[in-house]
Image 1: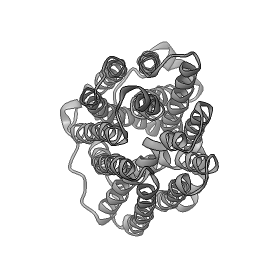
Image 2: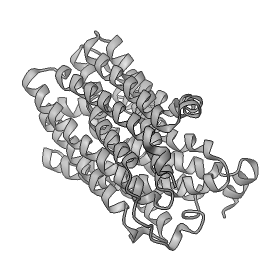
Image 3: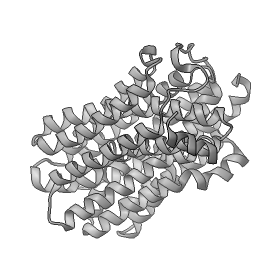
Image 4: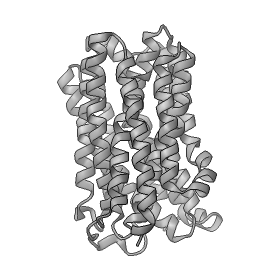
Length: 396
């Protein structure tokens, strides 16, 4: 182990891994996945792309995410997990830089497709490494640190884009800044995480995920959440701009979402202990549905602010709940179980921006697709409750 890791282990066992995971998630998820949202209004204004094009580019990212999730579930990474994550972090930074050099819809779509592929693999394998160490050390609460990195990355990216805007630079500078910040986080991960998965996972292929009603219901619920959250997560800054909001309001709404996402796992922790992971998933889905509906039904700035708060408080918590549920139902196959969940989630993400972009281009509003998304989240909550009912019968 490195000196830094040893020092962290002596103070709080597993903290070095948790912080490394925090920075990994901030890079490939908070920045690599979600910085497109605050940069998008500038791209819409300066490149000539329209909302339908923007939805297509976002969907390309999610197609890549789906294929990355599928690829991560196979055994090719066994024994080289840490190297795969480092390569993914470097690739994510380079793909941000590539966005600054591109200029047409198809170039943007290809780059965002590659970024989605990289982010899924890096998130799944990075999460497997970090959770294996903190669980082996008896520190499951440090999982909140790991998942909190997404919110930190979102907030940091919002501040970055706002600072670049006020400095008088455009969307290309935003992507260059994203690349530099991602590179810094990648370097910190290398220093903090110096091993692959703990507990002997490094050379073995995982068995198949056990078939159970609870696991299938959880996967279905998480798939619906992919559609339910992504319209707001992709277009909320565009919603603010369409309602007459300025650059300050745009930055505020996205920073607020990021801060709430970063804090969400700590906020949910006592609730999780009381009602369990599956029913917490259901409650979070309902709250997210309220936020998605509020973002378009209530006048700005109130609607987008409520939407950003509830989006931030729920979307990463839902990911954490789904991953914890998958590990509970398939403890011997964590990579495969998480990959299959992420595959379903990606299907929902692919459809959401594409449908919303076309509907907004035709109607001039994100109201109808957002209300459809809210309804889908209510159905997801019902499926999660069903998973919770049957989970005790299938836990190994």
